[in-house]
Image (cartoon, rainbow, N blue to C red):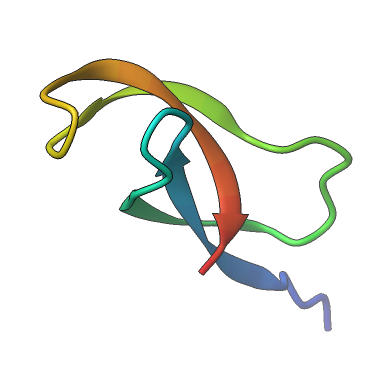
Length: 53
């Protein structure tokens, strides 16, 4: 029986380091997720990088 291991990650703003968004993804990835999202603290759309939740 195959098991898909999933982990919860947090997306943190690159300018203010605030953790705004949480997502679930597969465990076996060689890269870190990087997405443009809206930061409520900064008040603008900035790049968010994956961090530990």
